[in-house]
Image 1: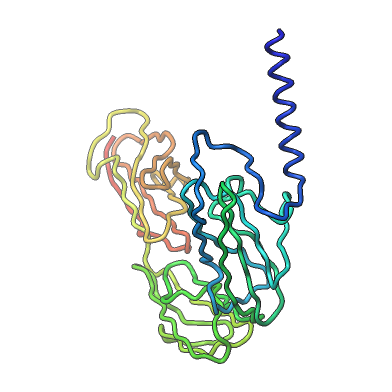
Image 2: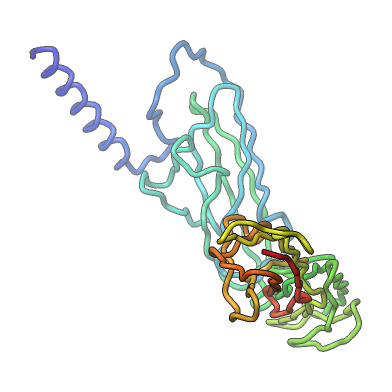
Length: 304
């Protein structure tokens, strides 16, 4: 019991000290929250690099999340971020505790139209520091909005990228197998796959594709011209599509269409229990894809 009480008191003291440290507004690198056993002091500064935004880059949003890469001989311990000389505060004050941050490292920053400077100071486990900075330009409306319809791709894909206003660009639409390119729409219209355009504020483009390939559906059981002897049977089959099958329907002896069931997106399907009549029977089935296209109706004749 004494040991338990002692452990609880120690835990409470540690949490109180940690809470006090987290609340400090530190002028220097954030204090070490978790020690490294047997760590040997060193004076080499960490290495820090700003991956986003890049120096000289144009961005089209007033709020972005930065991306930082940093390494150190012992451990990257803390970061301090600033925009145009103003600190970006964290719950620990000016400094962010690196081991507790979301990976990859970075923070969200907000800025004004025009030229902005983002700076990061990186501190290591022993208090050594290094810094990096980039200057970038916020141009409102320079982000391209690109909607690529199902069934194709666009190269190069400028979706969400900040493009230079007044500059000329081109993109080419490529339909996937079983699809047809139906043209460009939005701020600029064209029926040709290759689109040339001049970047304007808040430009929006849509690449449209149409599914022109029917799904394929087959009945695997009962076999064509075969004979069954059971009073009830379960029909089975397979369906496939260049995009996605959404349903398979079947009927026995014109009794009315029913929906089949599947457990693997219609790669295999089966009917409910069916009762064939004595003599000749006909089972039919067809599939529907996500564009509403129907497969050919598959008919199988068999005997009971």
